[in-house]
Length: 432
Image: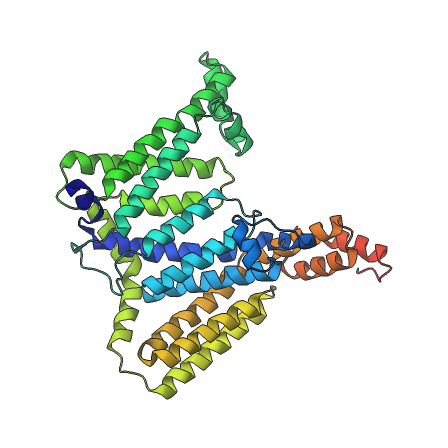
C-alpha cells in the first residue's frame, strides 16, 4: 500500500501538468474544428444510427449533421476557453462529457484515439488547477497526473499485444493502412540486395514495433516518479524512452498512417512525461510566457461593475453570433447560442470572474472561425455531403451542397462538372 500511495500521490514537477493542460486543450479544440467536422454530412442519413452505447439511442435524439457539428463547435469552445483560463474541474468535466458524446453518439466515429482522448480528459479532471505558471522547481501532487501516466503505459502495452496478431506480424496490416510500400521502397530494395526477402523485410519491420512499444510503456510507467529524488538509472531510462517514442510517432507520420491526430497527441504526451525536468521547464516557460503576462494583468485588475460585466457579455455574444454567421455550417448558431447563454448564466451567478471568462470565450470564438477558415474542412463537409446525396438519388439537395462547397473549394478541386451534370438532370440553367 505504501508503494501504491508513493506512486499515485507522490510529488512531481508542477510545470509538467501545467504545460500539458495548455497544449492538450488547444489541440483538442483544433482537432474538433479542423478535422472532425469534415465527415459530419454522414450523420442522420435515412434516419438510421447506431450509437456506441445503446442507452444513448433511447435517451437522446437522432444525431444529424447539424447536431454533430454543434457538438463539435461547442466542445472546441469549451476546450480553448479552459486552456486560456486555466483548466478547472467543472470546465474539464464538461469538456470530457461533450467530447465523449461527440464520438459516442454514432459508430460512424470509430477512431480509437478518440476514446483515448476521453480517458486523458477524465484524468485531467483530477489535475491540480494552476491559473499561473508554477515556479521552475515547484513540486505538486495529486493522483490525476500519475493516473494518466499509468493509463498511457497500459495503452502502449495493449497496442503491443494487439500487434502480435499474424496479420500485423507478416506486414499485411502495416501496408494496408499506410504508405509504407511507397516510403520504404528503397529499404526493400536494399534488403533484397542483402539477401533478405521482401516478405521477411515486412515481417521484421512490423514485428519490431512490438518491443519498442513495450519499452515505451515501461518508460511511461516510471515517468511519474522521475521528479521525486528518483535514482539516476530511472531518469536515464525515461529519457531513453522519450527518444524512441518520438522516433516511433514521427515514423508513423512519415508513413502517413490513417490515424488522425493520434501521433501529435502522443508527441505532446512524450514531451510532458518523458523529457527531463530541465527541458520541460524551458519549454513550458517559453510557451506560456505571453499567456502568463495576460493572466497577471487580469488578476491585478479591479473588481468589475455589473455594467462592465454585462457589456463584456454582450460584446462576446456579438462575437459568437458573427462567428456563427461566418462559419456557414449547420449547427453553428446552436453551438454559439448555447455558449452565449452559458456565459450569461455564469455572469449572473459570478460577476467577479465573468469578464475573464467572457474574454477567454470571445478569443475562443474568433480563433474557432479562423481555424475553420484557413483549412479545407468546410469544403470537405459540403463535397462529402454532396457526393452522398448524389449517390442516394437526391439530386436537388446534392446540387445545393455542391454549390455551397464551391465557395470553399481549394484551387484545382472544383466540382463544377458535377454541378453542370446535376443542373442538366434537373432541367435547370447550366452555369458557365
